[in-house]
Image (tube, rainbow, N blue to C red):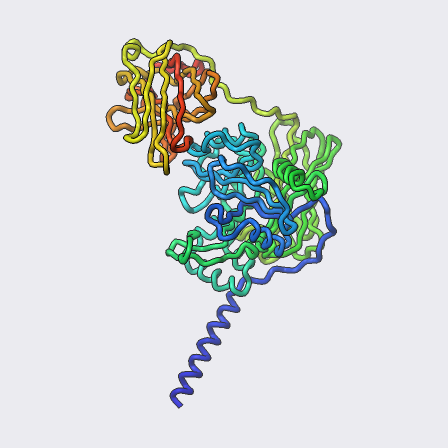
Length: 578
């Protein structure tokens, strides 16, 4: 009798646990009537890692998973420094595979797509330097997981001219969830994988930051899977290796949770190189929207603007001095609410699959930004929207592309002070690298260096110009003429004598000598990236440094620096330290 009682109690306990699990499962994805096909529109995934970095699958395995999830493209972004030549675009399992790279900076991670060539040096260091390099090398740059709860992953260089950002990043969405929610999602994953993944998606805070940014300039929003197909077991849930990982969430489940829809200029041809170019062009144009398929699918959004002055779609900029009619439509979707967001605030809503709104220019030259969100009936406002479009920006006048930033004219310029002219250049290096300096005309120097090979271990070589504290007071930029034996980045640094604290700004040198200006208000403490200008009255040296931030260990070469000058901006009229 006692055994029967125990067995019955166990059965009841199991039944209760099963019932609790079933009741706690996220709702299944709503299956919608498939909308009419558009041969120009592709569904796909961005920000995917493979065994080439910290992912669990090969390119072939990922492509097969994408095919099972009915995606047409995958953009791989394994971690790197952009010196590895990207794999040429290929179709695998019928899926267009495009190779990019995720670059680590001191202010977050940055994805580079479509680089014209491999980088001639390691892309790393300051966010500004990496953004500059990706643009100069012909690439399209995307801020990855900008609002990650993990500090070293969070983007903190919002003033830089990046091309795009991830409005949604699956890796960021679980990091701010309590352990109970994560454990529940893991348990639910066994029954409803895509829905369990999406159950951790709250409304990202970065949407508000994106709305503010798009009023100033074009910023494209994309959705990043940040897929690794492994989860760590060390107590931190980080993607692990070997016996310390579980192979979940799978690539297929992640791809079924959500995907971007990208509208190409023309239908794909089957030529991988050409189709990859069409895909990148569509990213750049912003002809992209995101659907959380774990909520409902398949789905399609159209978002257009039409008026006497022209027409466009999500991602476009329009010039209009007369009224413009904005229209959004999600076909065959009962129980949907469409929201038209204007300059970050909801301007119109529609209970149903269609929304129209008239934009009337107000006679000013300001830019008005519209985008669309779709929510399903019963979904709370704090949950991630079901669909998010890219914006249509409407202005009354054509906006010219911003000119390259040039330093203001100098009110005053001078060679380094007399007390410095008599001071020889000094050499600094790590214990195992070799280097030498040779004086050059015009108070210049040639630095010949050979960094120690092997793994990066702080190898560096530097030419150092010293001066008495206070010599820089009243001056706010450094001008010099520089060249190098190969295209490379060199770190220009200023240093305090007492505690050795440094501020840096890296610059690119080429074999042909060029004039370079480094402004003091652009220099930053290297790690962590902090605001604040160097205390000029306390500075005692300027350093020109070659290190493993941007230079591969084992590299040999020369750097020449000539005609170092201190200058003051005419607009600043600085006479005292700041």
